[in-house]
Image (cartoon, rainbow, N blue to C red; front, side, top):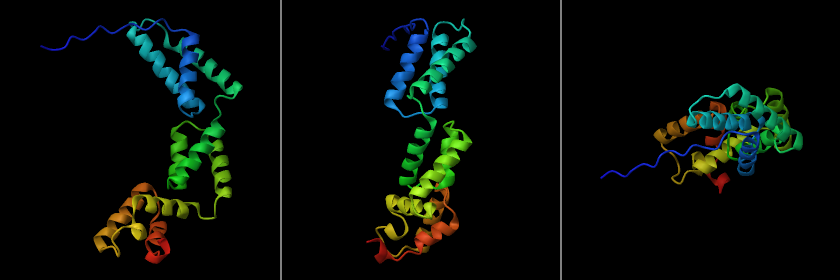
Length: 187
């Protein structure tokens, strides 16, 4: 006997208040930029219209969503610069190279000029070689190279480690510098 599925409950009609509440709920849970909030609202609009039969105009509701996001920006709930700075610092601390951070912020919808401003600010706050520090954090977290539990590494381990650095977005030179560290330096 297969379990019976309950019929899908139709959502209440779309309204500006429901969209605003959805945006605020999302922002209460996640830090986000303008583009991300717009994407969330667009998904909600499409899902709600599809559940009710798809007879409404999506473009009209998209304009409402854009107006809601502009209001949230004006009130200070959404700030692309603050979001980008926090995300960049977090990714840098997690051991991501600058190129990967730049690509991540661009994928989140942050404008290129804001990305460059934020990265220059973050790089001023840290040491000269940001990618080297990120590579050290990556190696420490993944227990690679001088941070590996078995010392010294075999040739096979060395190749795998170089591959891990390459997949993470680090250059060969930076990976080689991390792997050349003395084992006693890391303790």
